Each structure stands twice: as structure tokens, then as C-alpha cells.
Image 1: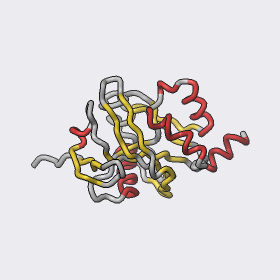
Image 2: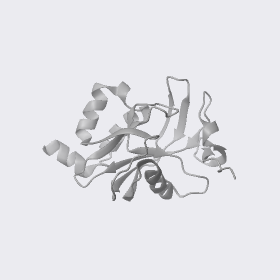
Image 3: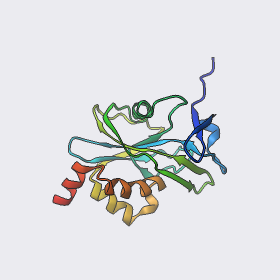
Length: 187
């Protein structure tokens, strides 16, 4: 029996669900607006985990990005989806999942012509288990301070995903990384 395809929730301009579509079919030159999420994981030292997207990814292969992203399934609670995706992509358990940017939305065009068009709430979380990233999702990963990440994005924006470039300053202004921000500025 064939495995059911992963489904993505399609939404209208107000974020109201209006249907679903298989993930494999949703991203293209005319990607419909859909629901997603981004998450930034911190460690006990207040550092943030950044990951480099695997080279086999359909969009933005090989770029550095936030800890992980994903799509909630139809009817799935967003926090449950974030925890599920942390396990699927990073082999990790997370705690203290906190929503910081509930209304984040972006549209971006990949060099291959694929469009990302997402309402993408942004979360932070704390790592509560060892990491075991899945190589088809993540080619590399690094723990860094928030200040060092902001400096790297400013120095080489092309090396980072468009959503990270937009989300990071908003998260820093919202003091989403209070431990890391305090540590970064006092170092």
C-alpha cells in the first residue's frame, strides 16, 4: 500500500484554510499561498542552531537557514507540527516552543524559478535531546550566537535563506532571543 503524500494547507490572504494540496505539487512557478512555520532552536548556552539545507532540497539547496522549517498537516495544531518536524528533520526533541511572529509572511523566488509563498509563523524552542539531523534535509549545522549570525547575514546575505534574512531582525527587535542577545552584547 502506497504511503499517503504529505499535505500542505492552502490559505486565503487572511490565513483562513481553503483546502489542501500534496507538498510535492504545491511549490512551483505559481505556488499558492499556504501555511508553514519556521523555528529557531537554542541550546542551554543561549546559542541558536543554524542549518545548511541539503543539496537535494527542491528550493534553496545548500543555503544556511534557521534551525528548521515545515508545514502543518490539515487539522494539526501548529505546536504539534513544530515538534513533529524537529524530530523528522533534526532527530531532536524540543521544549518551550514559543510563538514570536504570528503574522510573518513572505514570497520569494528561488534561482530555479520556484516560488515560496507562505504565511509562516515563527517560533523559538529549546533543545531537549541530542541532535541527529537527517542528511536528506540538512547537510551541515552550527551553533552560533545571535550577534554572530546577524553579522554573517549582513556580510553575506546570499548565503542565507530569504526567510531567515527577513525573520532575524524581527526576532531580534522582539527580544525573542533574550538570553543570547544579552550574552552577545555583554561579551
